[in-house]
Each structure stands twice: as structure tokens, then as C-alpha cells.
Length: 119
Image 1 (cartoon, rainbow, N blue to C red):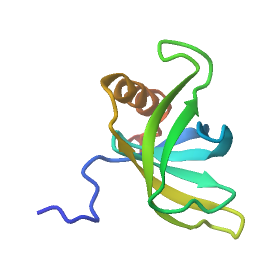
Image 2: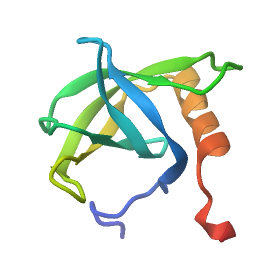
Image 3: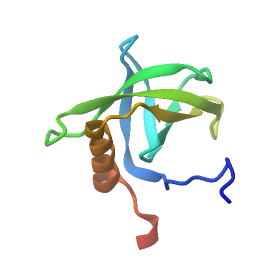
């Protein structure tokens, strides 16, 4: 039996942080620390209220099949102070993700994810 605290889909840390913008305010929200097909963990300079739904845009390095960025909807499900007083970590679950959005997320995981099993 899988408990609610266990992840079904493994998250991948990224080899560098991707910029995330809140499209409703057009403001920088933070940076993706890790990602899975079901959610992201975001590092930010301010706390993010739990339960809020955001339309997020991720900026990808360079250009390619997925363009320079992609967007998706996500809900904040937890938030805590990070390793120091100036950093906050927030977990988001993805909402209503389309096939194209999932494909872009898989691309990020495959191309930018750090595979710990190789080290």
C-alpha cells in the first residue's frame, strides 16, 4: 500500500534552476529546484500561500522543439522556509496538464534532470 506521503513518480533535481513566472501578475515567482510529471518544487525569495492556483510559465534555455518557454497550471500544496531565512521552498501539483505540456515536462526531465543513479 502506498501512503499519501510517498511519491509515485520520482522527482528529478535539475542541473540548473529554471525561471518560473506567474502569468497572472507577470512577476518572477521563483526557480524550479526539482520536477516530476506530477509536480515541481520551487525556490523563492518570499513565501507562497498554500492552496493557491497559479498559471506558471517556465523559461527554457535556448530554443528547440518546445520553444523558449512553456506554461501550465499548478496548485501550491505546501510551503516552508528554506535553508536560510531568505529562501522559501514550495511544492506544487500540476493541474489539468495536456499531452503537449507533459511532453515539455518530460523533455525538461530528460535533458536537464540530474540522474543521481549514475553517481
